[in-house]
Amino acid sequence: MQPLLKVNNVNKTYGKGTQVFKALQNISFTVDEGEFIGVMGPSGAGKSTLLNVLATIDNPTSGDIFIGSDNVAKMKDKALADFRRDHLGFIFQDYNLLDSLTVRENIVLPLAIAKTPVKEIDERVNRIAETFGIKDLLSKYPYQISGGQKQRTASSRALVTTPKIIFADEPTGALDSKSATDLLESLSRLNETEQSTIMMVTHDAYAASFCQRIIFIQDGKLSKEVMRGTQTRKQFFQQILQVLASIGGEVNDVI
Ligand SMILES: Nc1ncnc2c1ncn2[C@@H]1O[C@H](COP(=O)(O)OP(=O)(O)OP(=O)(O)O)[C@@H](O)[C@H]1O
Image (cartoon, rainbow, N blue to C red; front, side):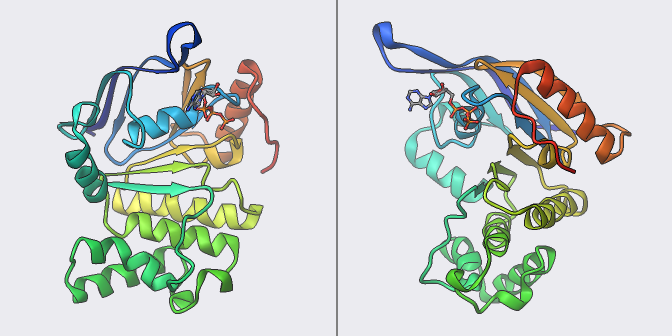
């Protein structure tokens, strides 16, 4: 597998003068194409900051971030906005759906902006709605569907443009356990069948156990890394709990 994401010596500081706070310090790692990688760590460790910097939502203070052959850390605003629209997908905890649009219209939005032909739009929407199990909901409005269904709609919208990489920040944070499992299984399936590259921040060991690899952040630095390898998901879950206990992260002991 080729590295798709290359992070070299990334630093992020907030504030100025004596008020400087180092949220990320010398972060370096790579993510292969087709990997499903998790980011974990104690509250305030820098997980969301890292995701936001990699996802071009925030600028690093220094360092390089290659997505494919493009160094997004050095890109200017206009090029960055185009790159974000054309190559990146986002899933947030609070869905960010537009209430005045149907489920279908919400999913179609990024394709319509990219002026995709109608026939192709129909094919793509049907396929992604099938993957996320929301085909019967396409004509409903966000207020008519559950939180889990909203998140599967938001995930469909993030993936319908077949982005190079999907960034998910606590995507199961607001979901009940059944809805969380449905979402995580859909993401895993997509990762396996379409080789989608997914990076997910989560504080939840159960959600993390669906990943192939987890990197742990502590005080803005990379501290540990674990691979699922040939372990079952339950064995991986136990391993993640052990690492969390050793670094003082939150432990969410459900399976
Ligand atoms: N805009 C900002 N200005 C100053 N400090 C910030 C800013 N954003 C984040 N921080 C600080 O940077 C550190 C990392 O924050 P971040 O949100 O990345 O942590 P996290 O690991 O995602 O935490 P949580 O699990 O609680 O969401 C925290 O100490 C936070 O207070």
